[in-house]
Amino acid sequence: MSEKALRDLNALPGPERKIESANKGNLMKPISEIPNENTEEWRRKNDASLVSAPASENGATKSGNEVGNVEIEYIDSKDLSGLEDVDMTLKTILTGLDSKDWVLVCETLNNVRRLSLFHKEAMLEMLGDVIALLVKSVKNPRSALCKTALMTSADMFHAYNDQLIDFVDPLLVQLLLKASQDKKFVCEAAERALISMTTWVSPSLLLPKLQPHLKHRNPRIRAKASMCFSKSVPRLGIEGIKAYGIDNLIQTAASQLSDQLPESREAARTLLLELQSIYESSLEFTPSTTVSDSPEAGSWEHFCQSKLSPINAQAVLRVTNITREALVIGS
Image (tube, rainbow, N blue to C red):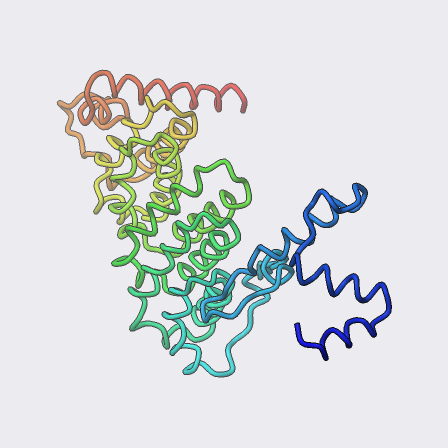
């Protein structure tokens, strides 16, 4: 140390000279030298300095409050409004949906909803790409993002109807899966999306998409698919049921009567009663009989026995007859 530095040091008051000397020897006091009552506070401050703030996509850091306190607003369809700059929004839709920033994805999904409800023609050419990225968000384990994607699905079915049918397969699987989960608010959002689908997509196009899921290995998915199938069939109308094949519909419902979940069985019973009512009230399905024919030739019982295996026919007739008897007794 130079003479000038020594003179400067000696000129300092006592306490400051001690701090200067201590800092030359040690950059940080050992924990043992810290008073006991302040040890925890010292640890907390120094531990906090070792944790780096999370980085955003462009490398900028976000504060703890910004990362931890993000709240997503779930906007009802009736509260959405049109976009001021449709073209600019369209340019950012795909990149926004594919972003790693989940908050940005939620914002973009709400813009997809606005485009669907107020500017649906503008997004027609990119529907396939949008649905593919929508499925990615539905599968996301983050519940807020998943729910926003499910709400988007419902609005898109409402807006585009049959125009989604070519892209619906991967989305349908996820909707059935999410609707069968235990997380209530996700499950409810998925069920609303399924209701929108069965309401706005033509049953003649939707039923063939649903039918494979009636045999899914997951019983919960089978149950949700059965409920959607049961709700869609009446929308076919007489001509639609005739074109689809009432015997095919009865066979499908009969196969669900023995399912392990009560939801599947109840959906099958509801569908069979609907089909029975349509069969007996419409001459379209009742075969013409001659004098030599048995009076029962055109009956519901005879029809079921002619189209189903003995065990399935027995199960179907038990369901429909018991229900009819109950209605008669109750009237």
